[in-house]
Length: 197
Length: 197
DNA sequence: TAGATTTATTGACAAATGTCAAGAGGAATT
DNA sequence: AATTCCTCTTGACATTTGTCAATAAATCTA
Image 1 (cartoon, rainbow over the protein chains, first blue to last red):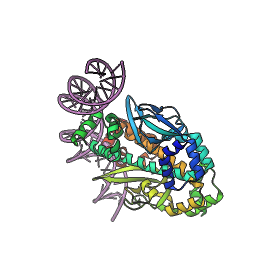
Image 2 (cartoon, rainbow over the protein chains, first blue to last red):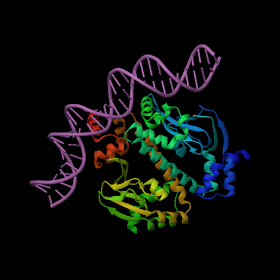
Image 3 (cartoon, rainbow over the protein chains, first blue to last red):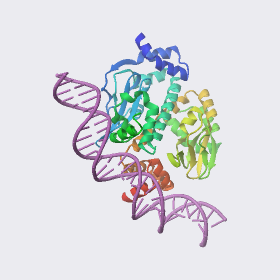
Image 4 (tube, chains in turn purple, blue, green, red):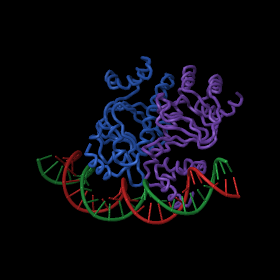
């Protein structure tokens, strides 16, 4: 439990920065979130399953991906300190159209949809926090939309550098490429043109 | 006021479907939302201005757009029954990176950011409704991200047909093209290949 | 309604990116 | 350490899309 507290410190702080939370809510969260260690290469959520959990990524790196025909597309890359779900699936508890896997050894704090609803029921004020968090993620997503409409591969890769530089070496380039919606070969060539940044 | 009530019926219903709202909240909303008629071609929000209002589009058609170099990019197309803001700007009350303009004569119900905060203060339960609405828009946005990663122009245009068919004839093709991130000429050719659907 | 302006279409061509294939380089496993 | 597997790089070429230009069509405006 004390362990939980330490690992969830970032999350609690994040919530307190939005609006201080009561000690009771804090304790409920620490109690409900289950800490798990997940090795690199494991799948947290399989496509077509219902995303029954929300994960707070205490430490590590994840990606979500889906298949278009015979191609695999990386839709998001998520790193330490972020909340992870498959949005459509989690919000409506319907089958996911994407999978989520670890790109590194991870420590996650897991909260089930049902436990979250229970928390909303007991602490209605928590809706305020999650509204603001959802708004923040909404805006980040908007920026990814902007990125995908950029002119050329170099502009897209620069977006990646600006936003994911710290994780550059931990993410296989083929995933970066599909995240940017370009062929891996194109990314390779773009990188060498830009001088291997 | 009675007029307001009729025009906001869709919005009130939308909220009630999420969770029935109190009569007091309903009346406050009807009181705070200001109905405005806006002619086609008017700009509701200029880039660099702060998005100080949220609009409920009672009737009409809008688009948001921004400039990339010398090109204009249409980022969203919004139609009757939807809530309209510039997300990043409205949420954080910072300058917008996009403009919003009408593509048809519109009737909008306008609520200022400050009045909305006031409503949140007086009706904390309203956070629940807006959380769910934000979640819904979040998911829709995710689908637009999927669209932009589709293989070719035809697949993108089919996405448009599936989601905006009713507004096809009211939206200039050059805007549809930039929304899909293809050149207007490419859209024109794609359409003729698909048989002018 | 006529004229002016904007938008859409079509063709020719250029440019960027995708595809296929081969080989190099790393990482993982035994 | 050697082998195997996978990823990245590089080249050659195909394909798609973008760009430019001319014309047609549609829309706006006086």
